[in-house]
Image (tube, rainbow, N blue to C red; front, side):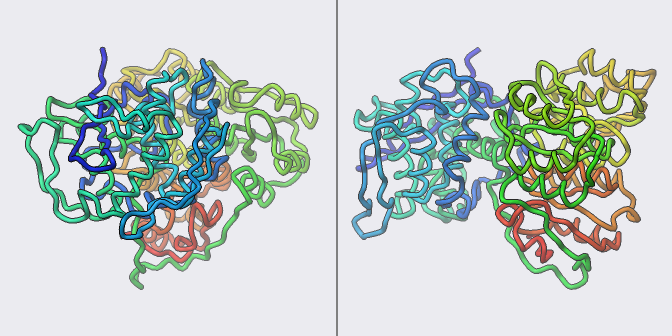
Length: 592
């Protein structure tokens, strides 16, 4: 069944710059449903029509480095079946080494330097810097328009229309807009134009249609910022309730999907596009805990610094997992915790020198690689084997790998408790990792949309002697069918669902269920949107019987501050640098 909705743009009015709108591919058609970084169980109530994305997230000229963009594309596309995927193709991009301004002198884009063989990552990075539009926004737009960020066999037609720019509903695309490089530059320039030139829809109360069919009606939206106004200029429709009720599918005849899909993709990949606005905590809920930070120069070095500060030489086991593609590391964190072992991160094809040096310092009796050769190559395994014996825990996919990691860590000692978490997103499994590690329990990844556990998962729960299962996350991420199915195994397993309205509240509830107030002398805090630091942190927190909380970038949620006061928390250790968890968290600045 073709679940696509027309993504051909139409003209809003005769202006020099054609306006691209996107009644776009639904998520089922784009392939994103498999293997996303989905951060939380999004619901219809989370979508705010007047504030789809914050200005600070949208107009960010340094949101991603060129390498981060390249790694991001590699992680999502994988092995390209042609030479046209965004992680392998190159383009000749015409030089636009000039500043583009409007008639009043407002700069829309600074000088952009073209070239004869530029990678997609290079083009996106240079356009981000030139136009001051976040690379995250560009990547999400590429996905919602043509699914290019996850497609391993894109067509030339899709690449020619990459951003959907200047491709009206009622006519062919403008010839001079075709081509990947043109689309990235001109489409992003257009997004900036809406603000610089005060074009079309601007912040304020605006009537926004539900659908191109005027008979579907419209609704007044209080647009709160320029970024959201830009999205409505680019895609001048808002999703109706039917589209929001089925966030990863289709709605009804009056449903539009462009702005809904933009919002869902952004949440899946980068966390919430809405930046929490900090405000000082009232004096009566200011924690007295001392805040310290453990951080390195990058994610790999942060894991090294966590290990170096907390693990002595001759550690029995060291766990190693891919630090750029996280699923195999999610189950490794509680496995490492139960063995009092650190979790270190690696690239697929090479170990960072600092990581290798740390393993040499630890002199473990065993190195456990979590994941198959697609996650950690044989070359890396061979390199590690020159330090200590190596065991690889892996299966055919993230779910079977999770089972093998759990079996390798818990088979000998057994486990009376197990956590189940979706394998399609990371936050809930990360929050569960420290809680699970503290009670010597595995975290097992499941396909949350399935109607039953796999036979292999059921067998493992039986082999380990599990009589209590805790499901991390709501029904949108782990189905009610799985909950019912789990109750029926092992002669009647006790099953509890632990879930909040978002990733942060779910983590708070998981910790509340696992840790008594008396065990909160120290807490660990890591980014709720950039997950790598929480991986090594979960192993450490679980080992120390301390909770790990995922936190917003620049503020602390009041419920966590209140919990710290009630528990008389004396120390908060922030994991990661200020680019992912700012000093505002260390000051206990609360989120409004």
